[in-house]
Amino acid sequence: MAEFKEVSADAPVAQKVTVWFENRFPTAFSEYKKHMSEYYAPKNFNVWYFFGSLAMLVLVIQIVTGIFLVMHYKPDAALAFASVEYIMRDVPGGWIIRYMHSTGASAFFVVVYLHMYRGLIYGSYRKPRELVWIFGCAIFLALMAEAFMGYLLPWGQMSYWGAQVIVNLFSAIPLIGPDLALLIRGDYVVSDATLNRFFSFHVIAVPLVLLGLVVAHLLALHDVGSNNPDGVEIKGPKAPKDAQGHPLDGIPFHPYYTIHDIMGVAVFLFVFSAIIFFAPELGGYFLEYNNFIPADPLKTPLHIAPVWYFTPFYSMLRAITSEMMYALVACVLLGALLGVAKAKLSGALKGGIVIAALAVVAAMLTIDAKFWGVVVMGGAVIILFFLPWLDASPVKSIRYRPGWHKYVYAVFVINFLILGYLGVQPPSPIGERVSQVGTLFYFGFFLLMPWWSRLGEFKPVPERITFAAH
Image 1 (cartoon, rainbow, N blue to C red):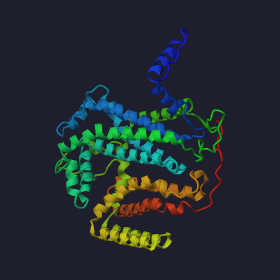
Image 2: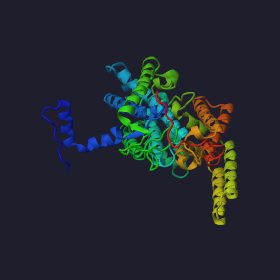
Image 3: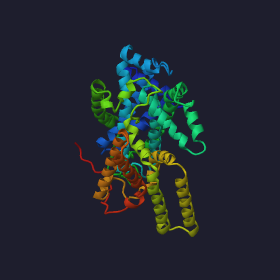
Image 4: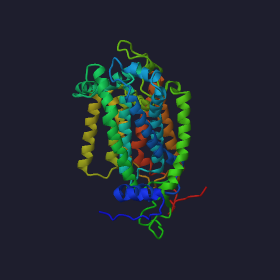
């Protein structure tokens, strides 16, 4: 047991209260020092580093508003839509709570996408932060599950039919598909049983997983230290330190970055509030107009599409047609040939690669393209987990990579946005072709990264971070 600290009788009341708590709960104070006041972060953070704290802010907004919504929401197929209308029209302040929650869902994905992009361009997934990145990708996956299940709860037309389409995709899995879809729905169609399942997962199960992953993400980050725009380690054995052992290129997270992040929070809340008060539907992207119509199992909307943050992956799903399968078969065979020709492997391993490729091709030609669309859609998220081992660049940050690498990343972003736009639009022959090319580029960006990330002339990385006070 730690010794009690003494405090002077003439000390201010605030100091007495602080010491009283510290004597009885020293773990909290030591953790505060470890993760805040004595956690040294690089002093060259830029605006890209706002999005981590903003993600925490939106998570809090979603939890608090969700608690108030659950007080009035009825998870019953006969009452759900009416209970949402009751919240909007009759509950004092209910309309702003509901709009904060619905806008917060989209804001969460905006912030998380930008946060992940920052990690991509600055190499924040590289050694020793592989586990930080993996926890982050798991958060993204849990967030997608949380958003999908929450999307069903208003029980509007798009909620109902969107869930019907997405859950039916699981039936394309060979052997277990139909039973798995039945288990998820709890019935042969999306019904009251589905609503209750999704409600329980949305309110209890997935948030607990999400919070656990967020804690793991932060603890893993603070154990290895934050990355920075230069990709230079400030806490390594060779990093310069002062007499107390603190890194010379770092500053305490509190108060410097807590104050720094307040600016980002202020700008975010200004934009967030403007959307809530003036454009909560944002032209039908944040809240689709069809979702203001009660769910009707007998009337299918003309065009069913998920919310905007799922549409890039939905576009990849729709891109996998019977015709597209031949292109994918060619990619598998080409990849196997390159692996056999270029890789320094034994004859047995090369033979194994050939046999595996032929088995995959046989499966691709015999199993329905709908299943492979589901595989591609899921693979588009799962491939992110392997990014730390796909990037073979000798430097972390985009600052010190060849100039043309920036254009590759720019094309990747534009391609992702185009896929997202096509996922909102009704199917068309031209859109199908563009989404097929975009899908090939998306996977090519990652699968060919071990090759293209090593090409070009790299700039020398400085021994210490570059920083100019402002």
